[in-house]
Length: 127
Image 1: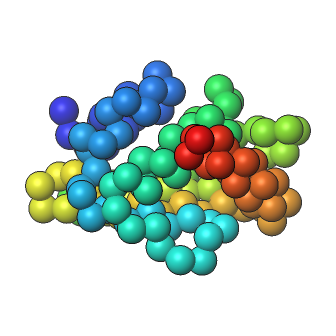
Image 2: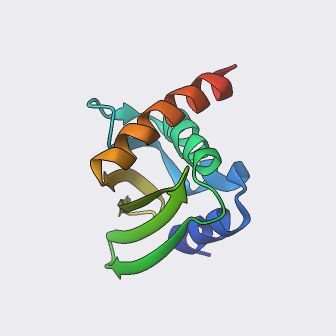
């Protein structure tokens, strides 16, 4: 199963256990609210796991644009009554695993709310 199909399974089951297998060791996560790239598989897993906890069962992809090296997945979700619209822009390495995961979110009200929720969730996951 390729990395994108596995990503969809991870999201469907809301189970982050397989994340490390689909990410390169040097994967980079680009957050909509953190201005510096988060370098490495461990940080990427942390951020994606946090997002899975913050986004709820209303999270779903509405559109996909896929090429050999990239996928752009548009999503929607409602958290605390705020409708969130965003895109996951995924880049694949030569071996098919994800080497870059970029998230963009709109509207501003949603991004501000997610900033606070993600910060709290990341603190909780870090222990």
